[in-house]
Length: 271
Image 1 (spheres, rainbow, N blue to C red):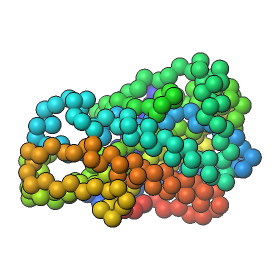
Image 2 (image 1 turned 60 degrees about the vertical axis):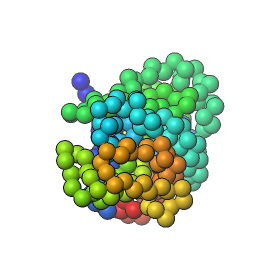
Image 3 (image 1 turned 135 degrees about the horizontal axis):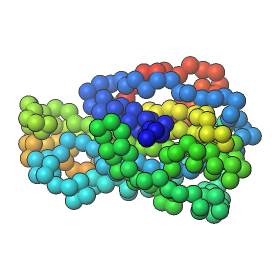
């Protein structure tokens, strides 16, 4: 079975988030943009806004043996719901995109009739469940994106996927993935974008990773003295949403810079 480009992009996002835990820089590649496909007069629609279901991060000893659904705050549904308006605002603010209203997309016969893809990504040895922002469907198939572009009479459709994670630092030593000793935690978000035209061609693809710092507004750093302490996922929700918004801003800045003929970095700074 063919692997969708969106699944490949999500895998890259997961790798970027994992890498951010041990490095200040991540390799994402330059923004891949078909400049002729965009412009102030080109109309676009957002077809899908989603996130990996699990708020990834080191868990306390008691949490390791629980189902993620039983861990308070480990489900990212509230995070993607709160980040969703920021994503629409940022896309709509780009001078290179004319975004049709969400209400028009949701009310269209084409979107109502679109078959949602399974909310699960299976790639290599990884399997990840997906959450979708309110009123959206999970779309990952290139031809479904293309059909929506034709049905909505727009120049292209956009899919946004976010990965939320908690980066931990410190700890005196590690045993089987659990670190012990004084630790600090900060939220990290990777935001990926992919856009298709009516022919099913990729016209924009990029991702960026940002990690919150203690000085950021609403950022919370939790200090533990033992690996038995549960990771406070709920406390890091505000920071995760805020850093997700910053990642969206960076993603759109890279897009606009590429459209303006500027060079964007292949290696991005996480903080």
